[in-house]
Image (cartoon, rainbow, N blue to C red; front, side, top):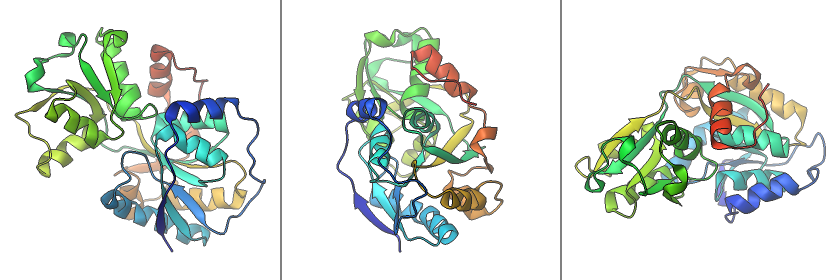
Length: 290
């Protein structure tokens, strides 16, 4: 039975600090819970997105034979602490926080989706006068979440590589890709870093007015779109069951729920280079991914 509930938001800074400083996970080894709690990416935890994730939860439920409960969360790095505290058993991550979680919380990377049409956009209000990245100086820039790949790390990499002084920006976090874009349209932010899929979706839905907001830059394609992770202490059988149903699958439903991927691969075989480069450029302490 797929249900939904909300975990009170854990701030990204507090969660990340706790993840770095805490000792070993309290979870028992080789545990098989009665219900698998599946964490929903932050900023996307609305009713429509939960409906979209139900097929993914159903796939996991069928693979393991364990009821799955969709669990909303406050922010990406808050998911890490929730997993350490056994509040979440598995989660759907974007790639950068997945790697961070593996390094600081010993989560298991189970499956990685590749080939989805996925990049980061820098969008700006037409009223701001920003037409190219070199025009950005001390503008207010809305990012999505401190742990977001396409809404924080990659947009910042694009800005830095273009010569923008990140320290000069008035930086804010909107909490979601849609709210970051709306902040630009409504004038509370000059620019924002958001996922490319959001642009077409919001324009088609009539939620984004192209006369008020324009695309200023786009990153290179991001090679990994979605990562399925499991907390430390789960039964190895659960890891294997979930991996078996995702990795190498040609099932259109599986590919669709993994962000429209063309392939789902073992994370050990994925190309993490862009994330390593972004970490180095942005001064994030990220170990080499093997």
